[in-house]
Image 1 (tube, rainbow, N blue to C red):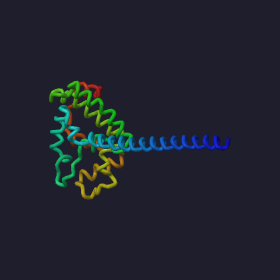
Image 2 (cartoon, rainbow, N blue to C red):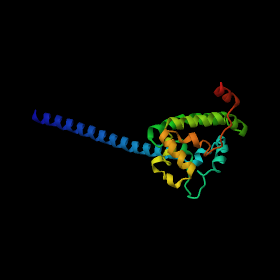
Image 3 (cartoon, one colour):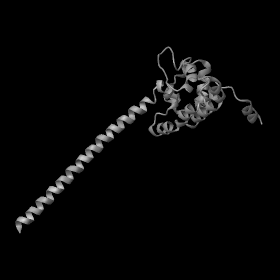
Image 4 (tube, rainbow, N blue to C red):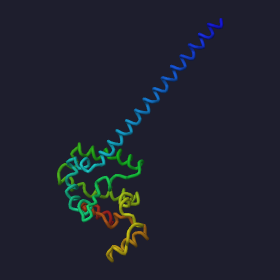
Length: 199
């Protein structure tokens, strides 16, 4: 009788050891899979922030050519602000929201909404205002990731810049209120939009 109890205990112990070993193995596999997924996700996310990726769509050629003529593209210091610096938030949650909402850019590329300079110009006012509204809503978060008021040496700025930046900081104005068109040409306001604002 004692031998059969011992045999049963050995079997139970062996079964528990196998179960524990399998649980550890599954845990390790899940851990490794998580690392691979996180790494792959990070690589893909980084790739979608590259200027070459952003400007690979036909509809982005117009604004890319404009951007190449600005101080954000070429300047004395050699510092370049890319598409993602201005259009993709740095904090994770807003970045993920922006990435999900980018589906509309892909959709319009596939639909050919902006595939000619004429179509691009027809939508320029609407697109610019959507970006400007987003910048105002986020307190110019992307602009301020490079251009922070508290880091500006106003004494090094010209008289006009010194006065306007001080006033903007005091009044809580947004960068885009004065710097619309800094990286892309300013759109012409449509006549019907002017009529609404005057009425």
